[in-house]
Image 1 (cartoon, rainbow, N blue to C red):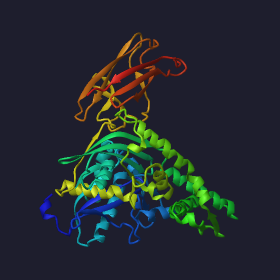
Image 2 (spheres, rainbow, N blue to C red):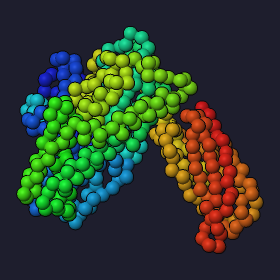
Image 3 (cartoon, one colour):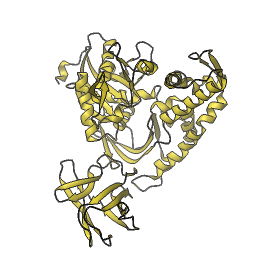
Length: 506
């Protein structure tokens, strides 16, 4: 890209955050040397829109964002599209298969069309897209396809993990000294917490990840479900004609989307919120008090303490960190738009430590815009992220020239990994030896250990079924357990169980 020729007001460097729940975009302002959010609400001033796409077969029209969510009765709404990246799925549109990546590409195209709101002559010179840290290689491959479907495949500079985007947003200048930073991301899928050591360097900032924990028991989707259940119960208790069915469910989803934000803001602490269910006949009006909302969120607020304890304990340095060791707390994600979530964190930390961005959903997009500027030659500090929490290789069994994966690259070592079931394609009449190996990015397979299975039940070929479970005790050590699950009535399960310790090595 001829960067020097693209530094006037008609060329834009874009940061885009296509989230599973909502999406936002930002651009790097060449005049102020800082990122700015782009209004994608059509003039209503909202910082983001739901990542939702709808196809209306009657008019052959595609509808995006809130309009798709609010108008569910007109046709199927496609959501949670980011979760589906890497699966190369198709959906049915008017009797024809269509790639999920293609549908998401239409959504991205719609998002990027908002750049014209800034300048009708705008031309996009480069794009950096924020992606989840857990994205697999397959997910990244399909997500790149999304931009080609959107017509911006050539403009895509890089896919950057969300943590780097948040850190780039915060560290626009070099810190004076080493800092312990706690990053909390309260998203739709889970609450994510990461503890980092940040050090200034001559050519940028070195960031070492020393703790990284996800918890799906604290998520926006669970809070949203509780709000929906509450609003529905209030309606059912007051309505003269309680209704059910898919239409009512769609109406309640839209009603929840419209009203959930006001339930968690300061206004409800001053006076109760009046809810007007205008989709029913006769209409229903209910009042919701602060006490009811506080009771609704109480279990989530308590879970923050437990979660932060996990973040402090599950670190690779083996140090007993405390909340007092934290210099700054970065709070991002849509969950921190709720007042109770902010207050919960503020009550746990000294005043001034916790930083809440006015629109926390925009942080990743603005950080991505800053990284786009850095990658095209502007003077923005470079973030060097050192992370030993995600596996850099696949781990599995080596069977002659075949590799059978147990855990995939980019998994976090502390995650619960699903057990695998294996049939042994050989007759068992004695001990057998299995090789454990890791497959590097270059597809080279290297053996890291051997395990000897002694005392297996004697069985003919193809009827020995074993369950293999893998648990990491640290980012370099794992425990492999193998048990017999049996096969039908002829070969019932036995109490065979073996445990092996394997070291990943360098």
